[in-house]
Amino acid sequence: MAKREVLHVKGSAHQNPIPTAIKIGNMVYTSAIIGSDPETGKIPEKVEDEVANLFHYLREIMALAGGTVDDIAHLSVSVTDREYKKIVNGEWLKMFPDENNRPARHTTVQDLREGLRVQIEMVAVL
Image 1 (cartoon, rainbow, N blue to C red):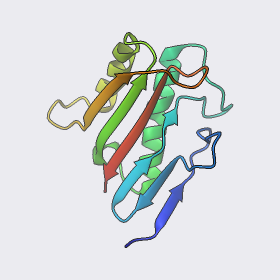
Image 2: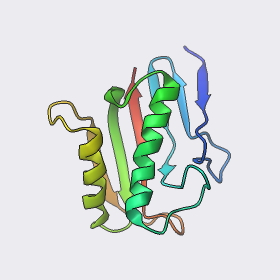
Image 3: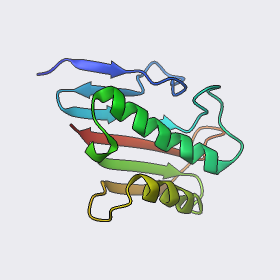
């Protein structure tokens, strides 16, 4: 089996001792990614900025892994309010404009740690 490679992305560090993402063989997996500001590490006041940061991190992770967002196979999105799904859809359509070339996705409404409104987990195949 291939050795696990930890992918560190500036601004997306976890509070727990877990990596943002790992690459193992041709697979890429993330932990729960939060939409913190890439420069400050703080959660933005506007949910639109939080969601935009999430999609920024997806691009960064895939570049570090040696791929692109076209290699993303599945996203799991968690939101604290169903209305945030509309904001996620806006960034989703920017990243994946071709309806015939989008990854699978599942969105759930759930409680997240204090201050978070949205988080994403990803699986990609290089």
